[in-house]
Image (cartoon, helix red, strand yellow):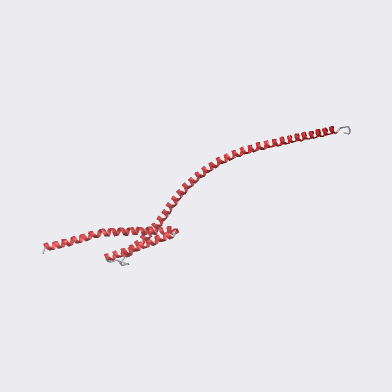
Length: 213
């Protein structure tokens, strides 16, 4: 380079920088191309993953619909079975209550039979020796039954857990109360007939007396 002129040295420097620039540019192009290929691969992979996710999401949605339908079906079946079970439980409860009530009624009948036998044997005296006493005692028993029924209604309302035990007694008292009311209606209907027959007999006697002085 000792024999070169400044102009030539400047030209050599420019050529060297140009070559270095071109080399750097080529390297940048290669690097950019490699990054671009990598990005394309990533984009392709991402698209494939997105497609797979979409497919899985669709399958999961379809499965969810099937599960929801199955759940609704099972819920309906359960509600039907529960309703049937409730009905059967209620019937069993009614049967149990009726059984207990019949046991109570049987015991009452047994006691009544014993009392009637003892009464027929003369071991007891009658409490009501007249019609008025019988009517008064019937009214007292009727009011007593009504009072007991009101007390049991209050207990069943305040203590629902005791309804099963109180139900037979409630039924028996209701039945007795209905029977007492029926007897009262019959007595009320028979009373005018007795009065009418009594008046007729009195009229007949007075007429007979006038005809045979």
